Length: 210
Image (tube, rainbow, N blue to C red):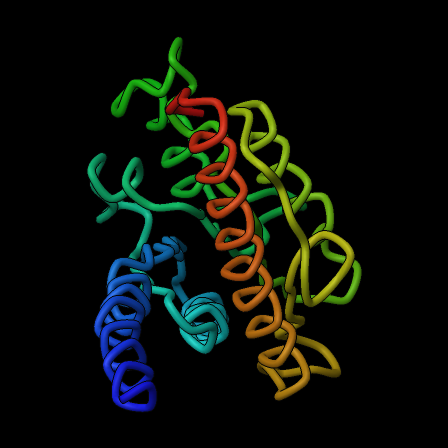
């Protein structure tokens, strides 16, 4: 008789705990990463694809891969991270990328609410020569992100992923693509950790929002 009651208790416990576990897995929030870029030669587009691959390799990550001119305000504000890529023109970002950053305010209206606050930001670039202003360009992109209260991260290099496409390196090699994938993976991982931390803070304090 005692053994039968034990069996019944075990069955009841399984009915309570299993759905709870399943529910936890089903309701896990997806991390959304926007990889936006400008490319004329196709080099920056190739790096963007690699960044997207690295982000998608992290479980629970959804990636939006688009040219900067095609990004909508809904996409910009709904993602958890923005990875921005540009070719290097005269030690600076392409005009199309700068226009996209300017559009954050003049077209999408991020200020004064700082609508990109606490989103993860990262940069990647391609340049013709080894010393062609790639780090300066990445820093310019990251500076715009920091000015919007975003959380800037690196990966694939000190300031982000980069590739040299002329001279002794006529194209993008596997090591440079690996750096781009590393950047995408780190962005996804940091975004997930940050999102979990914010959710825990909100559950403890009862205060929602950035």
